[in-house]
Image 1: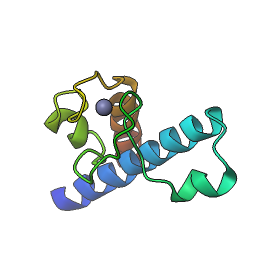
Image 2 (image 1 turned 180 degrees about the horizontal axis):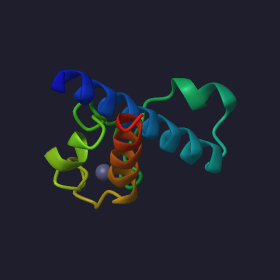
Image 3 (image 1 turned 90 degrees about the vertical axis):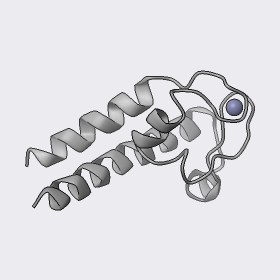
Length: 92
Ligand SMILES: [Zn+2]
């Protein structure tokens, strides 16, 4: 049963991650096709992020809140929003 709750948590966290990325891209006036197809990258050094960096909440913890390529700080808003949506979905 615990596996089920962990799966639901990561579905919620991944949804928050997707919403954050899409809002960021709309704000930066990405072209419509790029909203869904372009790979995520660091805001500072623009290095493409690997799959480990993209893991909701865990990517932030593994990299200790910093970009693994340029060592710049990652906004704490991202893991917090992922954690909150993952937790909210679990309560349903
Ligand atoms: Zn970077």
